[in-house]
Length: 122
Length: 122
Length: 122
Length: 122
Figure (cartoon, rainbow over the protein chains, first blue to last red):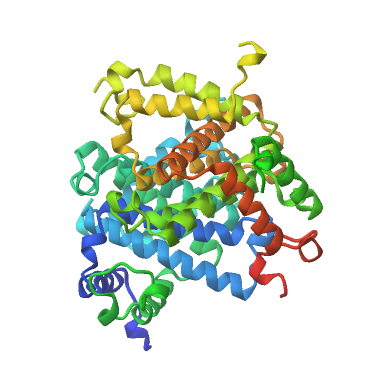
């Protein structure tokens, strides 16, 4: 596909919505059901890594790399679907969360440790 | 924030990477660990809906709507992080998956039912 | 198998431990890895129900009933394994949690509603 | 509690059922909902380990050990509940799965590797 046809977040969202509508799938797409489906796809992503060491997880063979690519796409598509049905702008929501996280995890306290925000002063 | 400052997928990814680097968090960000963290956030999204009916899940009160917004953002941020560390273009991956799904779930067989692709002919 | 051979929690635990030892699998069985595997099996259980209504989920066809039986067993076997490697008596842990839950969810406040304990007075 | 009062699988199941009935909670306990709740508890168990190394996950501090104990109990209680509502004998189901696993993972092929059964001959 020529460069001018590169997918954008908007083009993905539009295709995804058209896909569900063409199949009358919105009847199954309650937020409850989509959240479940999203968590199942997240688990399929986890499954790729579960018996690998952390180092192995960062050096996937081509078969596992492709599987990870597919599972990441599956999670993403459900995430865009639940955002649509809940009328949430996912970019705005992410921007807000980044700003909240910057407050919860100040660099001076969080540099080089992975403590949860409520234990930063332990 | 003025309209010209609306977040984009690129601006979110850049901030997210800078956030991790400023805190030296890439050491924790093996694909294995991020996949786990992503699945935990997906479960926190599920938790909002678990005792609700499907109808109730589509009519959230403001407190639950905000919680869902935050959890969707959390899943999204981990999804962008794992895509970065695995060097996956999430939009291209989504485009490919949409095309695969169109083959697996032809409209004529999938309209109005939620059968898995391998049971479409049952 | 004759009735005197009915499996017990003890006999299951013994077989499970022998199974892992015969395959040298304890090297993979860090609590981190088992927790991941357990969550993946839990998701496979969820997958059976995700597009069903609640009523449908209570009236499974024989194929789905058998699938649920297998997934429940899988979760159980990992739960016993993580209990073993963390040296936790699962029956004692369950007894303690039942007693904690009885305090957190007093009958008078929880009868007929599914509110989380920290919202019982909302 | 005196030793004669040690909890058994039967005594846990009886208390658990009485607990739900006293609170009229069976109305929320469709298999779909319980499976969701179980997966959420499994994720809370995962959360304890997500930023730990495998070695750290095997040497928990007392606070994390207690948290793991509680989450294991939570998963177990939902597992017993879903078994009850689906009318599944969890010990029999586990026994059957152990026997299936022994066929799928013969010692001679599985010793010292964690390959999935469908890749044992790779």
